[in-house]
Image (cartoon, rainbow, N blue to C red; front, side, top):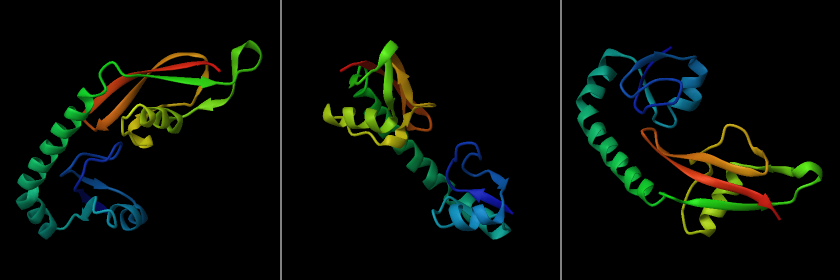
Length: 147
C-alpha cells in the first residue's frame, strides 16, 4: 500500500514522501495517528495545498526545540547505583532512570527523548544524546557512580 507521510518518521521517510508500507501498518498505526494519508491523486493535491502550513508549524517546533536545547548545555546527571564484585552493577541504568534524575534537577524530559542504544551496565561517564526534535539533539553527561 502506498501512503503519503504527513510527518517525518524515523527509518520510514520524510514528510511529503510517498512510501510503500504494509496495509496493516498503515491501517493500525499511521492512519489513526494522522501520520499518513492513502496516496490518491486527491490526497496528493490536499497535501500540496497544506504543505505551507505544515512547514511553518515544523519551523516553530524546531525553534522551540532549540530553545529547550539551550537549557541543557553543560547538564550532567549523577546516578548512584549498587555494585557487586569487580564494580559490576546490579541491574542497569536505563533511559527512565536518567529522565527521573533530570526531573529531580528541574528539567522536564520524556523517556523517549533520551537516546540510549543499550542500558548502561558499568560504572563510568557516558555521553547520552537528548533528541528534542528530529533535527535538534543535545548531549548530556551521565555519571554512574557507586552508592
